[in-house]
Length: 239
Image 1 (cartoon, one colour):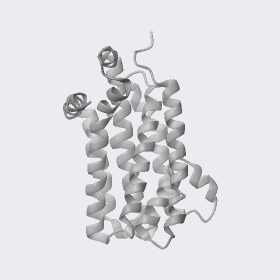
Image 2 (cartoon, rainbow, N blue to C red):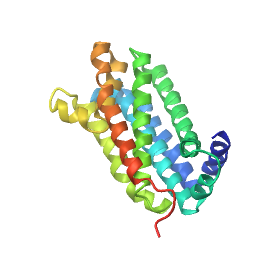
Image 3 (cartoon, rainbow, N blue to C red):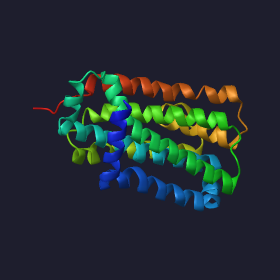
Image 4 (cartoon, rainbow, N blue to C red):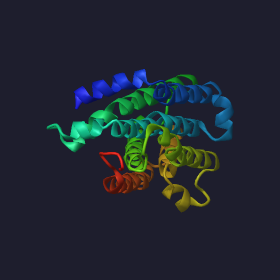
């Protein structure tokens, strides 16, 4: 797995498009939110900033990069060649997805730390970590499912748009308006419950037990995404 991951990490830094998508765009957007944290906190809250930063990294840095990577490796038959080795399917996928996942974790950690330094520490760090892990797991599952519908790296620029823009839109909606109205709808949409959980973790004021219940919708999306990936993911190009 680690040999595959090492090779994939090298490919990421050689591919300018992936490098821009996975590194530059999330960092630039997140830096804007952190720099203007007082303005955005008035619009929503510091928890809203934390949530939108997390989803920007997860959507662009992890999800879009993972879909592009899997589509590219399928197109050049690298997936097929790997599958002919002794490595298990799960090991192959883990090796390919480990680099973008690790990069996303480092980015989220660094940006959250920067936000905490300029705006104050979150109320519950453990809860914030749980929200981040659940969000990244959901985006990995959605990436595997989307990769099954993506024919090429160029096609990934189209197939990833609905989820990428959708989760960021949901995070913005929930972060700005809260969940006092349309509660069930907002929590069931992908990213909605994770946004509320992140806001609770950062802002405080909500019982931990009540916040932990918000993990259920996000983990539910993980199950749905994995089920879709199992059905849709392909190891070879369509003929």
